[in-house]
Length: 351
Image 1: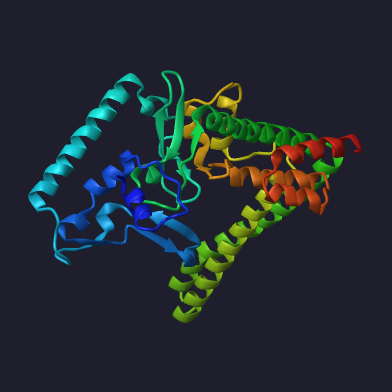
Image 2 (image 1 turned 30 degrees about the horizontal axis):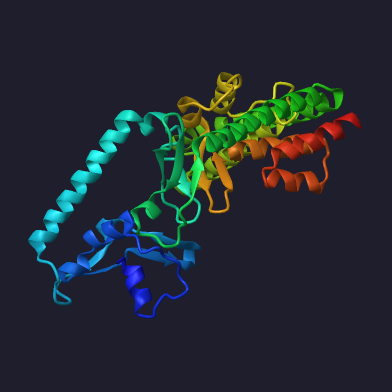
């Protein structure tokens, strides 16, 4: 009789359905439960409300274990032998399965895909000789009651991730093309020239300040100014020089917005050009673009990419260049890039 069936026979858990069969999770839970050797284990799962983190499992190295809190039912020697045997069986099983179906070679998102509910990593397991599924590792260990026994096909996850990356790259290319085309018009060129003149003026002013700064010590050494005046002027020139440099940098950034050769992050652009023709997700593509993938109980898949911030900034520039309304800005901020460009194509036809 299983523990649940026993409780039901005593009048407890009447609403729970059970066929009385012992599950492997129950057996493993009993065999590895330190309560049977007289120890109390605390802190296996926690809820961090102040960080808005739901119930999740804690690594065994962080558990609080208090020994000899009650009379043991099993001696420690027997318990340790049971742990060794559990480990042997587990190692043998995974060695056999991994030899037939090595998931690590297939797991393109290793270290990047996590459970959206508990935050822990998801594991990849063979379903058949040719297909794999992801599942929450903490539920598999039987240590997190907050997670459900859900599985999701690896192929579905890979397709969702690739679609996000592909869309990300297309959005970048399309936005970049439109910005450069708009900047090549006369209005864009005029704005670029306005910034060019402002930058030239500030650079000349910076040269003046630097020249005065270089001459300052000579004036001091020739006793044309005293030490107090020297230190005061030196500080003033340094502050003015830094302010001018910062202003020039800001002007260059603004000027780039109207350049017919508008530039984005070089590493980002190089990666997009390199992988734009990819037709399916591979390890190299995932490593280059994917930051984190979250899988939720309701089947939602959330994909965060390394260059999401860069794309959002680019779309903001694109929106500004086309004088878009607040609706488009909201779409950008929510990273709805597909809807954004569908809308932008309609806007472009009206220009």
